[in-house]
Amino acid sequence: MTERLRARIFFVAGFIFLALYFCAALNLPPWGDYRGPYGDFISRMVVYQRHATDAVNAINYDYRGFDTLGEEFILFTAVLGVMMLLRRRADTATREANKIKETRKLSISVQVVNFPVFFVTVVFGFYIGLHGQLTPGGGFQAGVILASALLLVYICENTEAFQRITSHRAVEVSEALGAASYALIGLAALCLGVPFLTNILPLGTTGDVFSGGNIALISACVGVEVTAAFLLVIYSYLEEIVTGEVPEE
Image (cartoon, rainbow, N blue to C red):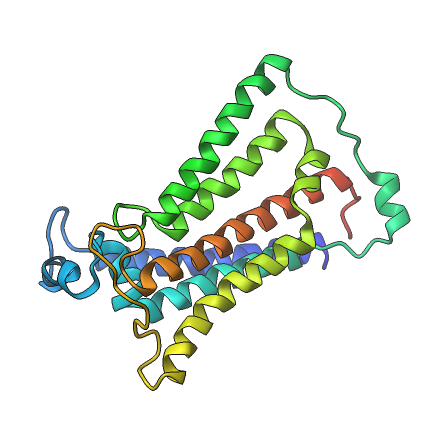
């Protein structure tokens, strides 16, 4: 795909998105105005029905879990589109010849500080992901945090170091499994004779990490997919920069 065709696709898609954005913005309620009783009803019932104390994640992964499944595959498709647009057709020899050698690293002091920051970011990401049914957070937020933790490696080292710890094929498989697992959880409910994405796990004790039934499991699957998706995007952009190929005419 040529650079000119990529630019055309970008501007056409951007114009359509901008038009839809303004159409949606015109229908927004006034600032601070709440339109309906749906949220109030869920807030009163979520602890009793789902044993979850975070109503937002109960809505995302249970009450409207089918919509969230669609949103997850939107992300999956968007990442796939980025990878297709940035793929190169040049042979291996040409890529190696044009490759930019990244040898400079940040100072030792920055690297020393970055190690505990990396550790804390990973721990915080897992905490946000595992406690989504109890406190604000969940798989989407945890995925972004965990992906940014691995990006710290690139910041204090170089692209080759980032690529060594994020095997491209492994990340691709992880993203596919994360997205597919969400759908498989819904299909498991159908196999048991109940509607798609109906909760099939024990609800547990309210306030416990293992409460909420399917909510915690679906949140974990989303976390895997989002982490892998962001890593693939970062990987693709870094590869675009490092290969240093001449744009196609």
